[in-house]
Length: 80
Image (cartoon, rainbow, N blue to C red; front, side, top):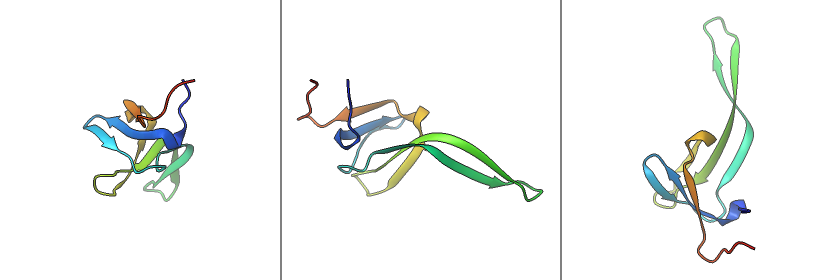
């Protein structure tokens, strides 16, 4: 099965299904969350993540890829 990012209509997270704004679902594997430690040194953590705009309230939601439980594609999409 091939899934194009712009076909993702909804995502399943632990709190339920979230409808995505068309074309807003993205993936990335190079996001670095940086924390400054007490000694002034930066600690970087590389995280694979996804993000989308929630259709219900327009919120921008980003989370680790491991929290993505499922996706729903647009009803008009068919596998070839």
